[in-house]
Image (cartoon, rainbow, N blue to C red; front, top):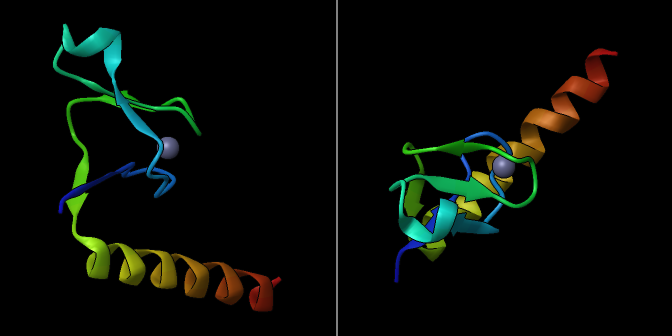
Length: 63
Ligand SMILES: [Zn+2]
């Protein structure tokens, strides 16, 4: 099963923009609109989320 993921905020709350008319995607979380979207399976999604968490904790340590 493929899951659509926002390339900006890694949210999975993606819907087709304008009901699919424009062929673009819309992220409900950060407002991203574009034709570029990440498409992953469940395992890859977990990796993405883990990588994102590691990025964040690294940033916090640097502050
Ligand atoms: Zn987003």
